[in-house]
Image (cartoon, rainbow, N blue to C red):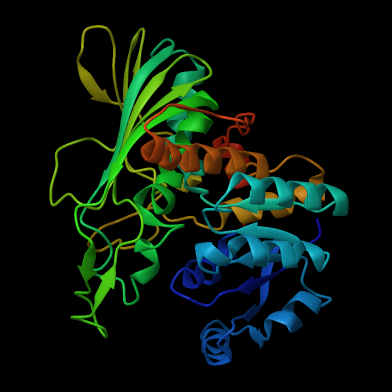
Length: 377
């Protein structure tokens, strides 16, 4: 199987995950990085022993087959479009785009050029989330009829060195963290048909608490407190709460309620954790773990062991290109998730339910054997 050359545009914090974890997978090799700030590109290239390029140089490089877009959300569309126009496959960090029109434009361009577009998040490929998928597909809780999903904290200004963009249009909790939850729900039970939401912001500004900009005040220009109701095509109704205005809470990350029982899932922002299930008697027990490689802790083993296999979606796309099959972190999935998120925000503005104008197929499940097929020997 051919190994595809990977280039990265954007050398911020998230680039270390791709550069550090890519060697776990077969079918891909990161060969170059680029950034508008050439010093940042040079430093990251030296750190991971790849070459530094200008953005234009990377897009023209003959040994680069897929370009990973790790720029800020507001630049995602333009950068991904430029990747496709350069004749290369594109893989973007989430969210793929910030409007349905942008998503449709990328779909048209990729179809015209015969190129693939993929998008994070790929955490739904994690062992525990695929175990939940198998439990649902096997009918262990019957038909899913309802559920809840909660991602609530007090924002990013306490730890991120440059948190400004989190509070600008194109970010906020529903667009920054929501993709993990919404994408996981779609892969578990299918596409969404309509949404309704209430949105607000508790604070007009935020004060940075992290170094090196501690004490700076930044404006809040997007809702930071969003409570939504999602209706799915198979009939389930799910409550989704995303907020950066909460100091503490006791809600579970994700719970799904079926006609024959309930599932209790860990944080979809991560690959691993424990899945719990109850039957009709209401007794909650841990679901027996399976031998899925993307559930094995590989970071923080001495203190807070976690499974982190980010780049799995990129590797799956590269291998899918070679094998001529659909990739799981697909353009259609990302566009539908974007449609859901933007419709949530629109509902908050208008006070009305919003019907989805897109749909997608559930991605193929990633079984333990299929996951092992993505990994380097």
